[in-house]
Length: 166
Picture 1 (cartoon, rainbow, N blue to C red):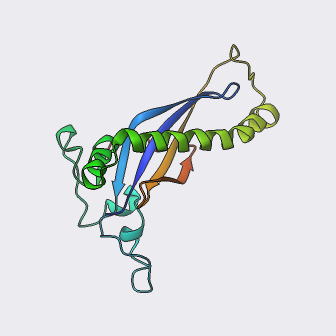
Picture 2 (cartoon, rainbow, N blue to C red):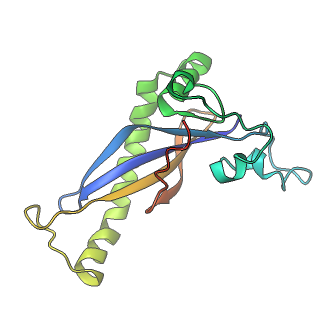
């Protein structure tokens, strides 16, 4: 089944850039087996979109029943999903996680100039590390492609932190 990973990063400083990637997240699975897009299946959102809001209403949605089953269902832990990839494809969770961490670092590096511009010109704040502190939680939606390479799908400045599942 097609899936993506929702990962969380907390940015605690822009100058210098300081961010922490939480080493867990949520894998969200489509509830309809994936087929490449074609005229007959373009409107089958549950085949092409991994969003929880789309798939939770599917009759094929499989809820996880607590921590004991975080490796089953339509919403799973990232760590369990990476172990399942290792079993199926031989790529270690550490190898994939290293690629994901690199993707996140590159994304934040690309985002940094806009953040500095925002804090300096639009919303003046002290940028010095000893200045007032704040933080930003960012959600990143990442897909692992058929070559086991992570691809950034979306960055969310205000991600859902709901703990409905798992």
